[in-house]
Length: 271
Image 1: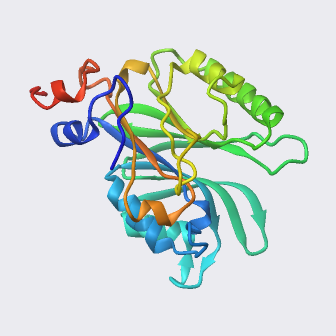
Image 2: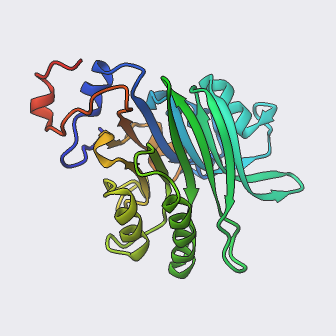
């Protein structure tokens, strides 16, 4: 059963009421498609992606090497199964394949940029920046996966703040990913909240006993975030070590709906 972020509307009610001019987006650390049972199974991850009912999904820990079970690259298999376009954001290149972030989307892609966030000799990290056409509005989506050490995350967030600082304040921006920030008051979170507005935090890791809100979605302007929830299902509890989280985001073509509670949304008439 999904949980509901405080102050936001019910995902299910809004999903049924709103049209394609709202962006339905998710972030999901797929852990190389290795599940809680330590088996690699891209088919399970594909089923979770189908359950999400999102048109755009940011992925982390995509191990894009040949999948023996499906005779295709991991990212290609997931994109084909979801009928989405795959945009890779590699951070590690190896002989057997590449590893890193990715974006799956059904929206038209207008531009793609990659940013190196690597810190010293730690595992290479990056941010994948993609401009999407959402019913005529340009939405900038940034997918990232920050490092495990506090100094590493602070360095990476500072680089992201420079990137975000140059964007117009009225530009619709979505920043999502596995932030790896365990402390609710950690500086990287506070810095990102400060420039993007507060992102809901719901426990998404580890799947067997979720304790930490590592997976986040920031939206600027903040009031365009209409709904947010952690996706919990029997398959999502097995497919990876993270649960995916997802959001519904209003674009400029639709008036922003005030944040109301579940009991109010159930009886509301939405345009």
